Image 1: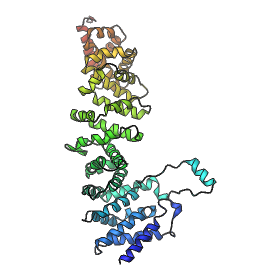
Image 2: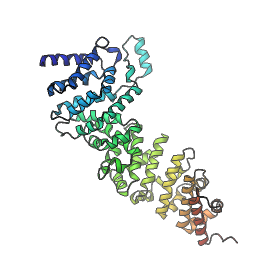
Image 3: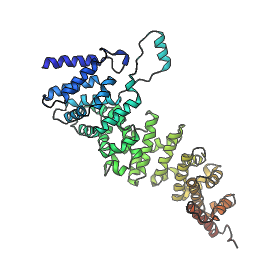
Amino acid sequence: MTRVITEFQGLCKLGSAGGTDYGLRQFAEGSTDKLAKQCRKWLCNPSLDLQTRKWAVEGLAYLTLDADVKDDFVEDEQALKAMFELSKTSDKTILYSVAATLVNCTNSYDVKEVIPELVQLAKFSKQHVPEEHPKDKKDFVMKRVKRLLKADVISALSCMVKTDNAILTDQTKEQLARVFLALCEDAKDRGTIVAQGGGKAMIPLALEGTEVGKTKAAYGLAKIAAVSNPDIAFPGERVYEMVRPLVSLLNTEKDGMQNFEALHGLTNLSGRSDKLRQKIIKEKALPDIENYMFENHEQIRQAATELMCNLVVNKEVQERFVAEGNDRLKLVILLCGEEDEEKLQRAAAGALAVLTGAQKQLCHKMTEVTTQWLEILQRLCLNEDLQVQHRGVVIAYNLICADKELAKKLVESEMLEILTVIGKQENNPSKQHIIDVAREALVKCLDHGLIKPMA
């Protein structure tokens, strides 16, 4: 039997020699499928010894490079569950083969970018051009992911992650991280992944292993953190373990989408508590966040500004804006003037409202760092977006409350007319919060003796 199995494994390896290249199939059409069916048959036979069933999984680890094989395999729920159960047995040497099979089924291996010009050149010189299997296209991959989730792959992966580090090699961890990331691709599936303990399982993969593996796991965590309630996804103290992996993705050497998802994830975390904000600061993320606020990419710049809007509640962050010799406050003011980018403007105005409300020094500094401050503030107070307008009126109120001289500058400008028009509006539930702040600002001007009460 051992000899038969050895020869069978040799055939499996030979059948996978072409890798994912559809044009380099080693066997006649259907032969690879027959090998895979035999592997699945052995895998699902509980009367066979553990070693034989283990060899069956190793065979599938090779054969599932073929898209027809992987597509058939994920449709076989009995075979999937048999493999998952096998991964929970005492023989943990099978874990790499299970992980490799799942990597193939989710297409989470590295694929070289195809450059059309080089393809044309290869064809012209009659060189072989790798050919993608029709079932390796994105819609087929997503269907396979859904099937794996339905078969409870998350529970199996979570059990594998808990294996002793001496057995779970860095290469296996990397494979598992690749699978987790592929499963997180569709935002609709992330709730299921969290509910089944996937978020918890990914944290150790993001902290230990190869650089590629840690990055993949951190990226998966960022995708979950960006759309999930942290208290549910990472309950208790575990939420603090999330910060370091996400901060690691802020490195400029990482992919732009990784930067973006990490910023979104950290924004979600930073809105939960000051302890989490302090943890983000402790991981030395502030310089990177500030750099991304200058980023040319609109979405990354917006995400960084939204994160900073949450962080400025922290006193340590406020002190960075108060410190002399930096343009942090000037940048936020100028971002408030970005009327073409609504969400960016909203976040910047929110940050400025918090800063001027918390630190009187920044109210004075605001008028000194740029000559455009008053024009930008007026446009905020006239903005059609009620959220932006509210932030603008709050900033004006903060300046008026901070100092009589600052209040005088506003009263001597068109700002007095703007506040008066807003304050005189009839009560309106949709904008009452704006009207009330404008009225409070006018009352403060009255207290300063800068305006007179109307007869």
